[in-house]
Amino acid sequence: MLTVRDHATADWFGAGGRFSQPKRQALERSWAAVFRDHLLKHLPVAKLVPYFSATQGRPSKDLYAVVGALILQQLHDLSDAATVEAYTFNQLWHYALNLRAETDAYLCERTLRQYRRRVIESGLDRQMFRDLTDELMKAFAVDTRQQRLDSTAIRSCMRTLTRLGIVTEALSKFLRELVRRYPQYREWIGTDQRERYLESKTHGWSFQITPSEARIRLEQAGQDLWNLVALFAPTEAKELPSYQILHRVLLEQFTVSASSGGAPARLEVKAPDLIPSDGVQNPADPEASFNTRYG
Image: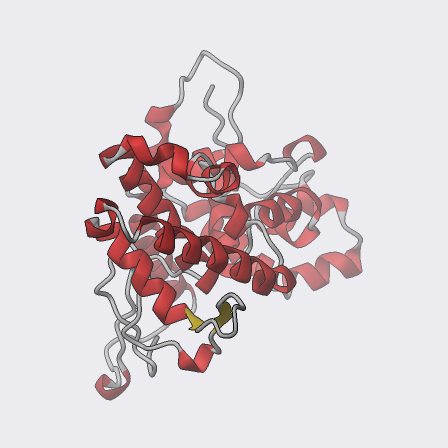
């Protein structure tokens, strides 16, 4: 059942009333006040209304609050788990999203993913970029009549992946194409590899980690990548486009030292400055390159 609260009307008994005067003053000087006062009420959530019934089903989360949380997730570069934690416990988020009751300050990861999918399907992400940019320009009187043309850079809308994300996506893409084209090779794939890259719908192995874990996970994913490249090299699977991307990612992200004296070859993660700017940035578009000046 649809829930859309009025965030344009002044709130006398909601989130702001729960804070002491000094804390409220600090909140009003923070980014949370800018988001609450200038952006939250302008979120174009009307496009999400068709996904819900006005009379049937359990009440949905307030559309403004959840869509706002998706924006804050991108602004703060958070995983889904960290976003849910901030939505539940972070008072800056409560103020920014105008969460008016303690019962409103809860969100599960599954719900967050469902709303993200609906936002993308409805094209709301592109509309929000336009509408909210215009609102901020109007609120802060930004004059766009003059612009330094020599400093203009256009940023790609392609999804940006970490090194671990690139490896994980390449593995997932290859395994999906492999079992679709050559189902007889499904049994060649190890159980752990199937669970990480083929059967997981959220790819949590690459996104739900802390920065301190990233290096270890990258080494583990690299080992999986190396094993699969070697395993399917003698088969017809090596002709698959996704295998070619897999092999390319292996050469770009890792150094494979030759075996000697009976010792097995070793796989080492390349230093970031050794990654080529024309390397794979996203397996969905292997020809896209990275501009070292503008990103």
